[in-house]
Image (tube, rainbow, N blue to C red):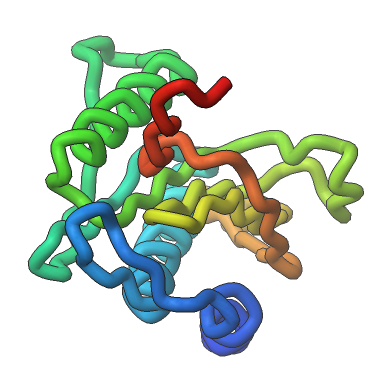
Length: 180
């Protein structure tokens, strides 16, 4: 089963090689905790794709007590713009990180994978996984096909995931005074 194989490979390939790192408040974020955030976002995004063929951006955060909290956002519109929801969620995570309320975050979005990454297909689940000293986009390319005549169900084929290191958005360390 792909999901089981993906979980094993992701834990090994993406997270076990990450050293423990510390938040400004000396709170350690373990690779297993980052994996929990990643798995939550991947599993929920895949469920939404199977049910609807799409999903709006959502996320999850890890508080200091080590508990994962799912985060959804709504702007009051019946059919919101996904980019607007993404920005609202991004702003929320920035504030929570700046206040020291969270030690890690994950944001999932349904994206077109940039062609520069030479993905086997353009559609992808992108999870922005971030904690202190760790910031990656993890892409899960997928193909979707409809099955069933009367009750439409989506079949999701998830291909090999890959990660891209990015500049931190939520846990960026403040610049030293006088640094340019």
